[in-house]
Length: 224
Image 1: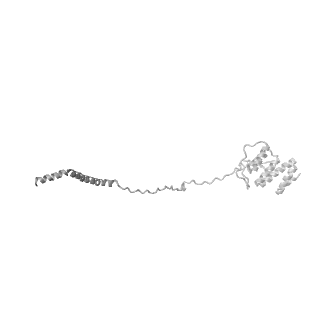
Image 2: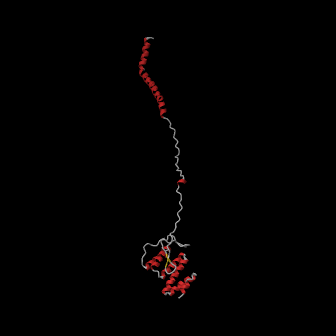
Image 3: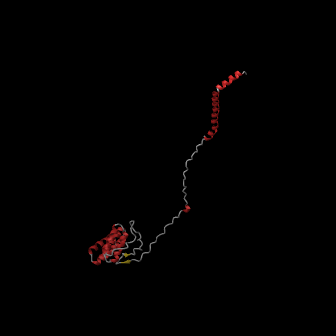
């Protein structure tokens, strides 16, 4: 090759050295930048792992199974039959009305109406005077507390055995209780005391009551 041509070529390369340098940097940069996404692609693929949604089952409600255990149940015990204590022998006051032991006296056979909630025993503390006792007996009678009224009348009879009015009111009480036989006995006792006291007007009323009820004892009260 002639020396002139070589000098010309070298001069041309020298004049275009900057251009070739820029082109070289561009090519190198292209390859470098093009390799970085390829190198990072597997990492991105590893990071973007899709997590499948976990299906949540509906909560299962716990149901308590109630079991009956017949063997564990308490057996029903039949209530024991209550036996009333025997009544004390009655003490007669001038006739057929007995003064009962009120706390131990059993109910009469064939007993009629008894209102609910009636106290089974008489009041423990009773006034001693006649009028207060009568008021207590009448109040209990009006309130339908027949047993309480009967208890007070019996207490009055024990204290005032010759009082005809007390026997008369007791007869009214027994009529209200549906105890016709006891009512006639009480009226008869009232008649005996009225005859002894000479109270003819009240006695005639008692005689009329016994006569209408078919009690022949009215004739003994009519005799002088």
